[in-house]
Image (cartoon, rainbow, N blue to C red; front, side, top):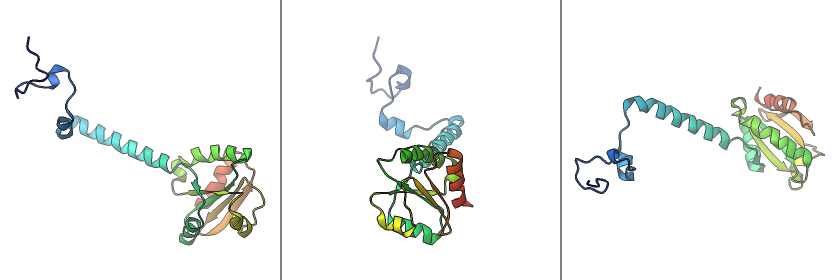
Length: 162
């Protein structure tokens, strides 16, 4: 019996030997038409999911980013957070999955460090960590302190989007 896996004879098919295709053949391989749509659909869904997950977290507060978002009228929520704050950790665990929902795709949430962003705290008269500030069209439209209820946090986020 002849081993055809390493054969250079072009009439032998690599696929018929149950060995994996070399990468150069995979790159040029054409998929059957009936697989094109499902493959493209799957790729699109994976891209959409990856995009959503990439934006599914609070971003660190940056004054220029905050100023640019407000000047452009885009919806933004500032979460005043402290690493040592248990309430803030619970809030972050609520906000992250909310941001993964399509409803909040256009919302930016900036996490401001309570111990570092003193100018921001003074400018908006924020006395406590675990504070949410919602902005729509550049103006503050909602505020909450120490809220750990998913529905009320989602409601505050919606106020920035209305």
